[in-house]
Image 1: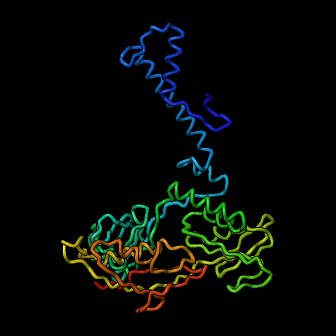
Image 2 (image 1 turned 180 degrees about the horizontal axis):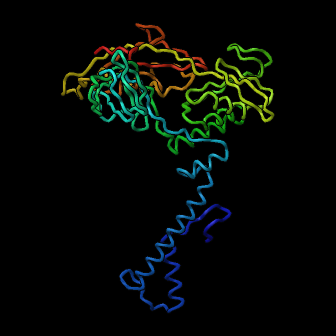
Length: 393
């Protein structure tokens, strides 16, 4: 049997094969009576050498697989994907605006920390110093101390973890902007697979892939009008519309310009000026997804009998709110709001223990009274804020 790089790919020699071959070689050289048992001195030496050789075969297999997107992992996967202009979505930290109240003139240094009431593991910190001005309060942006989808609903970031003389209280008037973990290898491979499928029929995949290489990009959707007339969404003939959440506007415009075909118009309400190789200014247009604020009412029938299962938590209403906010943070541009199914709003609610039944209403106006699907356009994004979620239990 052939081992190593063959016409059938890489065939690794396993430890048992290495041991068998080395024992055969010993007996050929020194005679069939040579002692190679597990407990014999020569047998133990042989085993150690064979094990070291098997590790080298593992390394060889890993190097071979690192060239292929299907088998590579970690950094080698990133390198293999870069060859086809696919980039892993990087980790982003949640951010929040904190209102600090205290004595005028008190210096709040970078690294001041506060955590969510009832959840000491969700911690945010300041990244610059600030002085409390006349009036006794100041707003400052904080970032989570860890990457990932950390939730701080409005009014919950109230625990001071870094005591400072003169600071009386802290709170957040609005929900935190929720971050994310970096894509796992499996998620990255699935995204790349979907992009390849799209690339076969649409030139927009390359533009999207280019924008996704930028820092702090949350998601991108590229729409196009291939016709000779303005379409129903206002896009001019033969134009593209990049809808981008997150990132730097100038970097986004440059990525669009570098990856779009010549003569194709860009469309959107945001614009930046970039320069071509001849120094000629070009205005590039794109859009930020328009937030569609979703109002939610969840009427919970809670379990109060331990004999019938887990009890509804004391802070169950707050947990339901946080679950909906976290669920909503994963929405895609243009994703409709549904009640049921794999992507239905009923799922995050039912993730909280102790719920016997739930009736949920949602819509684009306060006090919703229906659960009719909310249609979100392909340049819009559903927005779920805790202040617009009512939980009755």
